Length: 269
Image (cartoon, rainbow, N blue to C red; front, top):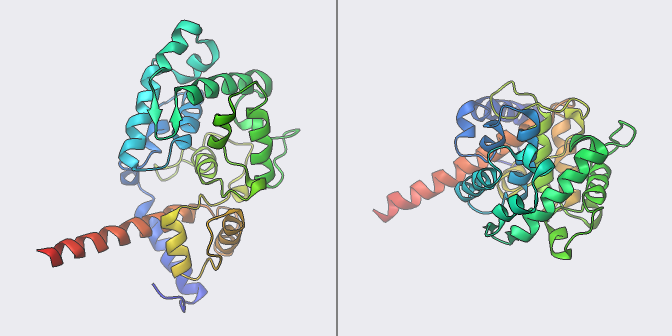
């Protein structure tokens, strides 16, 4: 990949990569398969948020633990967060994914119950008078409402705060899943009050590496300002749905890594 690539060549490269990676096959190794496996909208968005929350580390482990959370909720996560009694909440005990544990999961159930009862659901918790504003402001609004009930201080680290410079990668990924259309068999397109043009790129190590190699991102830190810079660069190629290129950048990053690993193995032989 060359930094001297022209804007037209860049768009052709990204469009080709999007067409190549934005296919149902992408889902087989991606955590988005977890919410996609729930046909009910409310179940999908509840388990989608929980899946995105634990989405760091090996993807296979993320997927396995996300399905484990769903099983502990009788594979009916929306009904569980609304109606689980004390005895049923005990089923969550023992859950752990890295630093996210049963204490955090119990609070997430309580917070989601609050959001459904107070704001009509997760989507509504991002909005003010049915308006979004800038996405980072909406994420901060969501976070404030999410932590309105009494909560353990340790759990606050599991919901990003863009006002403190966080790139909010996991929340932005969850929003991509919920908002982008289900036209390629990847994202779910469940939410209609937030537009694709308002989404921000879920910046991770793969998308950041490829974006910098292509000259789309100059900033070296993976922080909020980098997310805004990269999203602005992608809007030049598609102002209505810039975050569709997240799939392209991520796919290029993963395939490039796999290529390097295969070459290393070949040399070792």
